[in-house]
Image: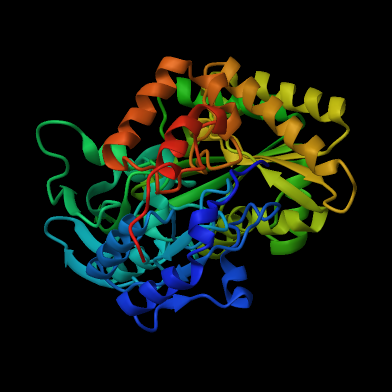
Length: 485
């Protein structure tokens, strides 16, 4: 995966830059090469590069000071949440300073009457729900990495999760942010009532992948916990049949809280790891509904009627809280469990639900064509695909072949009316495929937005846009004379 060469003028000033960082924020700078190695990649670990330095601030004011300094010195900056991104979104270059949010974990305010919580952006997703659980509330977006992933990263990638079918993704649960721009300016977007009149800048920032500024604080919508919830397992003898069943459930106007899909390779790996009690079949749906017991019974009865039209090999409702917990433990453990099968690349193309049967069949055809196994586990209710391409990182050419297969799968997603990413972001992984989804005028419009927020292209500048398309803007930054350190 090509990355732009580091700026020699920045590398030549390494010591002066790290001295300035240490003076600005004593005790928060990591510059030992052995220690910066921990920040050389995110969960797309096939590509890595140690940064020039890492700084770990504790407040919005400290982030502002750091960005103002890097702006004056013309030093590239890569924001980093928890590093769980699967698309290379927080991978640095050798001339970049990583600004990590891992120390920014405070809960700043909780308002149960207003159903909102304000937190620092380094707080983990799951701990947001933990902070309001005693009040009878929860935070709805629940990525599989929710134990570790940070709210700032969730906002950068517009993360979703298993329950986003009913409750929406991050943008649907985000009310406001404190954003620090590259020149150190601090702006407030949205607020307790959400975005006000005028341009929807909050919507622009959510999903912008750290290219426009660094989110340091976020106001999030919290929801009352439902009266109850119950999942059901539905097994099928073909993946395409499971996909057709999902489309039928949605077409019937039923909105479960979640519909998750797993195919046979993933079922076997997950069962060996989590012992969730999954049936032995070619494809499995986890369908969860919530409400009062009568409401749950009624919804599951309707779903059973629809599922039976597709001749499932098994339909099983959870019979206890423990069984429900194990069902979800299996799904939440799927990505880790798949490591038993080898190295893998995880994609996240998103498609119309009605295209699920066609795309699942197409993935199978491409898998056979490339000679690489593909396992599928994904948020079926909103068509957010997660094909896992299995390869051997030690076999020459295997990674390239896996990437080519992944590119063809994503092209298929776009071909049926979908898009390149649902929640992992574009990062470096899908950067060169942006021209498959967008024409030159679209890309130019998007880059002009970045121009407005970050005129010198210092923030995460090697991400999202194809390098040949963004080169004139990045070169413009390199041709400017930096201030003396």
